[in-house]
Image 1 (cartoon, rainbow, N blue to C red):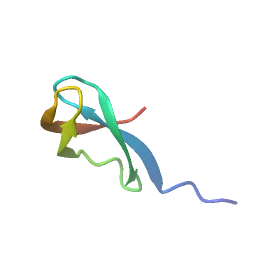
Image 2: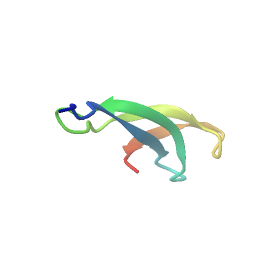
Image 3: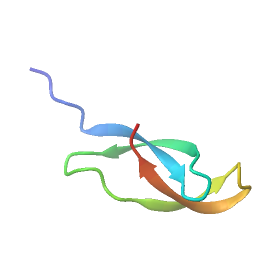
Length: 55
């Protein structure tokens, strides 16, 4: 029997404009971590905090 995938694709959502800007994969073995990174938001044209969002 095949193993389930240990990594899953998630989106990084801007906390100010709520737009999904970046896609990344995370390890979901122990649950999805709560991660917040400062990334560039093209809509806001500045660096803002981005949180993980599952589709």
